[in-house]
Image (tube, rainbow, N blue to C red; front, side, top):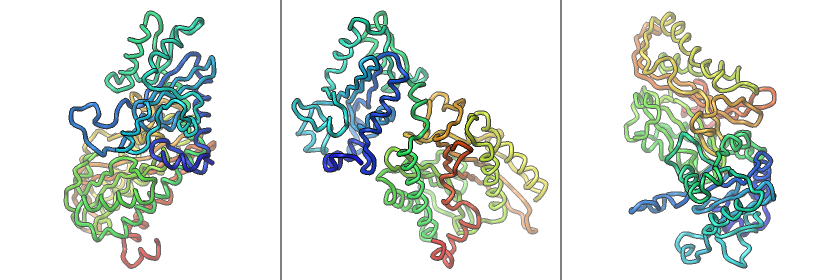
Length: 462
């Protein structure tokens, strides 16, 4: 259990900690694991400034989000910090801004360097805490020592040359001079460590699923009261925040009717029309882990026959995909399974079975069916999405097939025609023998959804 409970509570949003586990030891173990993979000094930069702080104007009260790589290794969720790891001396140095009581008067407690003050060390578990304005000088001195390597590691991605990590790499080169010390990316080694979830993070992921389940069930029960995408979204966000750990996993998507054919629809200002579907993509955050769920539900509580047929095709494609999800395969190897299933099912069930037609908004494959989930919703190398990474126990991935286009069918003697977007998404945890669907309790079958939306049955099921 985290020691110094009152201290951790005072810094609860600045140092991400658990009161069940010793968070300091968890972060320390991650740093040690990384140091076992490297053979020279390795440095990380947190986000340099608060949101909007680099602009002439600033958006006050925008929540600060730390660079996930830095947060993963330190738990420190504030701007202007650095981390140095030296495997040769097995030393770990945290650099934080100087303590500023006047700033804390405005924004609350911050981890700060103050000579003779041990709060930063007691809170984070770092024995060596220094002022951030000494970082580059300290690094130059360390790399200038006799026997020092002619290279260092830093966290950056070659394909992203405008983010803060790339700017950090450039400043390192100016400080150390490439002819003396080159800078190598530690990103690949970092992802090897970070993609498999350790036990405390798996626990947080499961708690996020429970919170999301509660929020979605509350939404289904309250559905008749919503008039538009906005009030539905506000309700769902409230439930997610109420049941989670204080943050949404990402901005909730509420896409009614044809709007569901826009994959990352953000407007949320259209009315809900009876007889249409509404696509929801939502999740909450617990600790540093997330849920990422998609469900598509009928506005009036009942799927029409065409909607039900298409929904079942997508649902069955997810089941077919899950048969292949196991350790030893990569997402790229199995990524076409649901899309091939959907195309075949459209021909057999819709065209041949219901004299139907379809016009898709894409060529066979609208988007990836899976991405890794961890410190970020879309975890993994941002350039490759880690699609060639072989799945290992502890990794968490999404399973989110979808179908988007204009469809028609004759069912029960009646002709239906509709532009529809459907996505169903669960989160899967890879195990030694296969996987566990962490989202299995969150309602998704036609029967479950219609029953929970029925005023006469909802109270019994919930």
